[in-house]
Image (cartoon, rainbow, N blue to C red; front, side, top):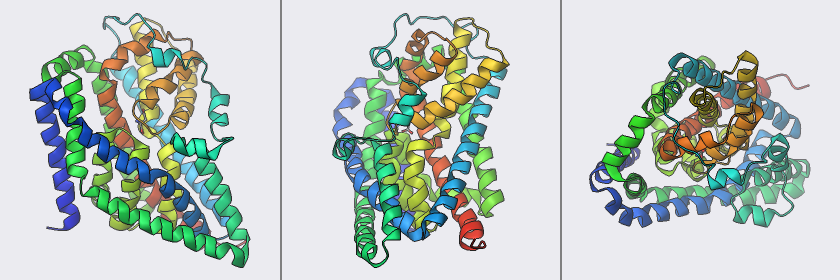
Amino acid sequence: MKKGNLLLYMMLGGIAAGIISGWVFGKEMEVVGWMGEIFLNLLKMLVIPLIVSSMIVGIAGLGDVRKVGKTGAITLIYFTCTTAISVALGLIMVNLINPGLGVEMTATEIPQRIAEKEAVGVTDILKSFVSDNLVRSMAQLDILPIILFSLIFGGVLTTLGEKGQPVIAFFDGVNEAIMKMVHLVMYVAPLGVFSLVASKLGAAGGGDLFLAEIMKLGKYSLTVVLALGVHAVVVLPLILYMVTKRNPLKYFINASEALTTAFSTASSSATLPVTIECAEERNMVSRKASLFVLPLGATVNMDGTALYEAVAALFIAQLFGIELGFGQQMIIFITATLAAVGAAGIPEAGLVTMVMVLHAVGLPLEGIGMLLSIDWLLDRFRTATNVWGDSVGAAVVDTLEAKYVEGGKEN
Ligand code: ASP
């Protein structure tokens, strides 16, 4: 058995053991939570040096600034198209299944963390790209400004000629060292994912309470998981195959360590080191493409979150008996896409940026209270979809870059 496969089986075993023990022993499993926290923190501590070095090496690998521009455009087109498809899919499913009809509305208060975010708007998302203090952003794992800085920094380095070379070589070394550290951290991944899943399910009250919660929102959860499933199993593999001619199943299996990590951590940012490792070393995506696309994707490309926001908004409308016409659903389409860009790659971030979507069409924020009890679980499915979307993107951009930027006519 290959070493990589063994790790994957152990991680899947960890998730299964986590589900069973959390289900059976309930709250008692919270005692194992510390192991998961250590695993999560080990991954998180690698994120900042990884993002900075990846963006710089990725950009330097692309060559001059014009090539960066073209590859950036291809990446943005991929992100926008796949996110738009996923939101459309969510809207279609929710209109077909109507999960909110006949559900009793029991939440009456706006959750505290949602109430605090009441004023989040499009301009706030734009503002979040720039930070006045990079060190603070790093300390808070506030990734967008760091990406923007590294993008510009890397771009400028490529224009410096000889003077830029040692700096690029330095970050290249940093990047390789961090990737080696990722390998080391993955040794504890099976224990980490076990602990994260067991303690979370335990904290939710174990199997019985969980079943009761999921029954209340069964149709809604089913709509979300079904729509995410179609996007992940049909749409993305189709795009992967059509553009790159790669075998989607093989690509999926090779990305599975990242997907299981995403499922257990509910954080695309914490998963990023593993996502890069799977793309580069197992799926053989070129280094420049994976280092450029994946850090960007982990923060701005969230197909699962966008789809979720659209389904949740319409579910809330149905709960309150509010009819939304085509025009208003279009507004949801646009704001859900933006809200996903604005959502950080951390657990349940999508729930908070949903305020923007609800505001845009005048839906009551109290509706979010209804979704809280089940969000920790749905978050895992959407995070795995987010990471899968990024992983496919790396291969797609890699192929298109080789065809149209590297091999294309210089002008
Ligand atoms: N947890 C998600 C992620 O990290 C974001 C969200 O939808 O809440 O990708």
